[in-house]
Length: 364
Image (cartoon, rainbow, N blue to C red; front, side, top):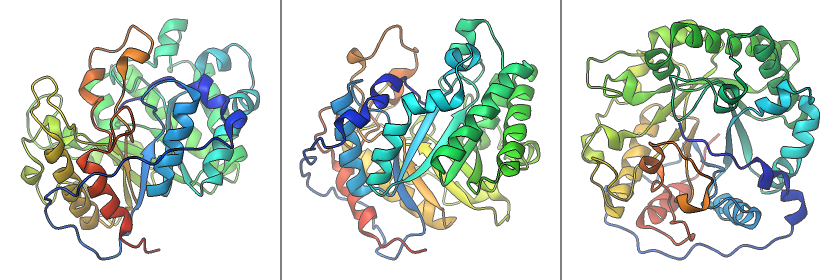
């Protein structure tokens, strides 16, 4: 759901490849529900959104998260301005991603790319750059640019997972039929192109869990994800996006079958590709650092219930919104306090819970 532009600083990572990092400060272990010590099936990961848009901050983010994760998520809007302006996908990747991927791989991290076709903070709309260019994903030329970019990324960097559509049920709920049809066409064509090109990446589309349960954007009946699975048949791993603090007062209120009900007895592999729980009150939501830490224990139980492949926390660090360009989406403040450390990389109670999960042995 959350994406922020950090392209320029990420492109500079090769210049700082030897930079050091300070460890996040220790935090006492909170009083948590039991966290199992049994091996986990799920790799742990974080998105690559820094608390401030500065290259040294990005490097410190990666250095700290790599100590307690096995996978890094690159969830991005495509560089539409450059792609549609005639710049090749390879040239863009040389500029923006080569240094970043080299640094991530050097840390031993697997890669999950979500090439988001539309606006991650406003699922009813086209991607921000496309709106600025007065272009649309419905155009064949735009869909072809998307396909070329994703195929080039796969050929160059060999990510273990590639996502081709995000929160598809929320897009279908919020967007026009034309935009949803464009997302569907673009993702399926890109999947076919990846397979024709020999990519072995596991292909992903994600669904929004709260929307599937009829909890967002408004309360209603359980909806499930049958339409999503029919519309995106290439899916080899189902992505789950979940921000349950918008729907439940406390983590213990989340049903035991919160993930498993969506599968409807299917054996389809699952990975949590984005989400979190706020450590502070935001809008109508009441929370605290202790409640956030309790969510981490509940998240582990839910991931165990479906033998998930991965659990990716959207933010490692809280966001310092004052340091990001304006204007900013109105809903952005609702997501800024879901990190496991604060914007200065100081540990919150949830970090101790996360580290307990990381100490569980990862089984193949």
